[in-house]
Length: 392
Image 1 (spheres, rainbow, N blue to C red):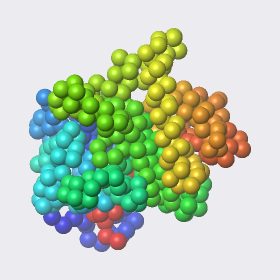
Image 2 (cartoon, rainbow, N blue to C red; image 1 turned 30 degrees about the horizontal axis):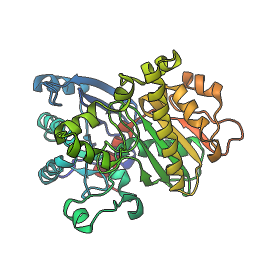
Image 3 (cartoon, one colour; image 1 turned 180 degrees about the vertical axis):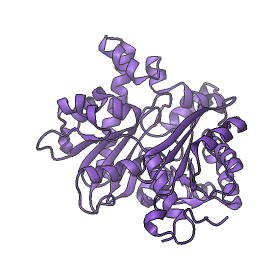
């Protein structure tokens, strides 16, 4: 289906860029709907509960919600996996929908939810152009040295085994916003600016972004790799997994469920909530102290690795639920990165967000500028929708 003109005959570019975009983000327990207007202001929003654990909502509820939102000119869907086929946003056609379904094996916990949401909204708004925006696409620019696993070529080619990376929409938005806040000429794709973006939430990953292009990231073939997360283990020795399967007789399904849902902070401290981990650690709880320290050890080491991939660092960004809200995680992480030039202003770190969503926490004279930036994947998706549906 070709994109319709959002404003009709006789409209000019100035009016066309003011289209209303419905952004659809399918989560594990809800379907987040946001309508972004001309200045990316949120004109309408709703979080609809999922039914029976799948992101498919009651059709009548969805239709009523979208009716209350008023007319929209295009829809943007957050899709977790685009494989190697999609390195940027794409207009959803029946063929594209089929191809996205074929990628489910690469993200079995996330892709079905995104596609169920896409189908549900298309059913209600069949004549409105829909665009798929991918969490993997921002990482398509990672060079082969960073993306390639040291595996036999017949494996890598047969199953397309490589580092895909995730949270790309968040990393893309945060790195662009950091360039703007830093006042770098030519933002958002500021040539040469070296940024490490830390998306720290229930899921967590880092990206090394140089001149607006991703050159490395911590998540790999799946979102299980990299940092310690709320319930996910992050990187573990593959030999450990093989040992558990061979010597402990652990079935693959149990291994997968444990690494995905019973590890990370939950496995270490008995809770997946970083706020509770930090509070218990302060009170002297040994398990919580260990969880906090393991989390921060991996975080600091990975930030340094991302900086090494760019031959240095100009800006460090904290985003996501933990990144935005935990002054202690930011302080402790930055405290171990003095050698990179990271030094934060503790007063700004504590109260800098009182009057702004995005703010700087760098100490005066610090070689690296540090920022706290609110995660706004919806803005990035809306921008990609406009890139696809509007004439150039």
